[in-house]
Length: 329
View 1: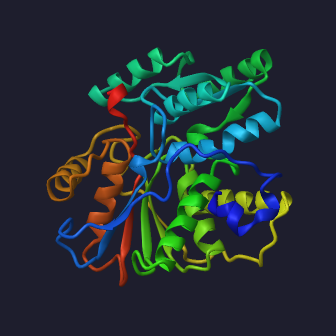
View 2: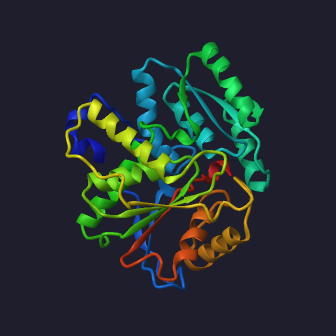
């Protein structure tokens, strides 16, 4: 049973989910990772996912696949960059559950990471449309909607339904805190490529009654991912829970629970930065972490840059959302 269904059994049928990975994911101390004063912990979402890809994208699909079927759809339509982890996860897990996937892909800087991911996408069975630009994608999606009648998923699966996957992560951390795995964290750190993970974490911690803040390290300059946008998505997920029958007191999602930084974007989405490369090397050398250059390395760089006292008192949890699988590498 999911954490959401344990907390709100009244939505078990109105808001169904399926289990696509093993829970709880590990939560452990990363002693020696940083030279700063923060007590850093790792929530290892990289191991989540029992299929051909892993990470936080699979958490979203636990809710999105049943929702597509609830709506009578047999096809996903979604968008992303050439190296989209999200698009690959959609295709692989969707196929396992009888859903085909159509992808509209926009250009992004191509390196070895993107080339390898594009090869995986082309071998995955997805129907791929190379739309190249955001404008052409916006123009193409309505045509694809009319032609296929799919369940449309925004970039990264960051819809009110998809964000429930990160609500699960927050509730899971709260359970681990309750069982003595770690003290209550003062902050969690996550990369923000489409907003669903940060929004879901914010909502989840408030549902759990924790004061934990979300440090949202924005890595995508092609979408509006400011604090107001992320809070708005969290409120939409809150509204979804209430409409499907969940009962809980009013929540304060407008306070200081969300800290958004754009300092790590660099030249733009998918562009490598020196800070991210250095952070990835430090994480590999000191903690054995394998971070990707687009998301988690920039999130790590954001956290390390603030570990001079600005992260404040209390433990800090870094969420590793990168989920490659060797079988597809």
